[in-house]
Amino acid sequence: MELFNNIRLKAGKAMLSVKVARLRRKAFYINLNQIKTIGIVWNASRLEDFGTLSRFYQKMNECNVDVNILGYFPGKSLPDQYTAIRYLTCFKKAELDFFYRPISKDANDFIKHRFDVLIDINFEKLFPLLYISSLSLAGLKVGLCTSEPATSPFDLMIELRNSISVDKYLEQVLFYLDMINSKSVKTAV
Image (cartoon, rainbow, N blue to C red; front, side):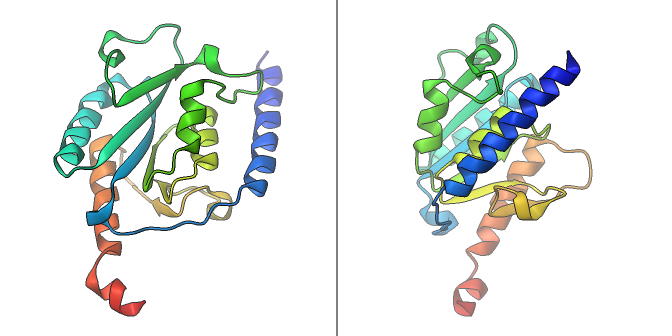
């Protein structure tokens, strides 16, 4: 059974590679103070991270930044804390096709939305979330550094050497986005 699942996953990755090759997206970044929309893809099976994401949403909301979070939950029914929250939508394992690609309307709408910044919180490198991050039309895609940076879908990669916490990761994302916004970078351009 494991071999069959690996073959399906490998076929899904091949299909994703074809789609990414056809994707025409120009990366752009305005600056941290002008960001109006942030999209986050997240492994929603990590219930302990929900509080951190809620605090991040509140912080960004106070800065007039619209945050949308799309989570992947591998279970059959969502935990109660994930329901009735307007900035969070989740898709479940039942909303994947034979090749583990998301087929939900929420996932497709998220991919097509032109966020100013996409933040990938997919520490386990789950394929359905990688699929969404890879095809997203976001201006700047931020994710964890991979072993093969040339094939990464991210424009900005962050390497965390110690144990990874979502709180620390989001802090580093904002730090580097702010650094890109610095006057020294503006004068260099």
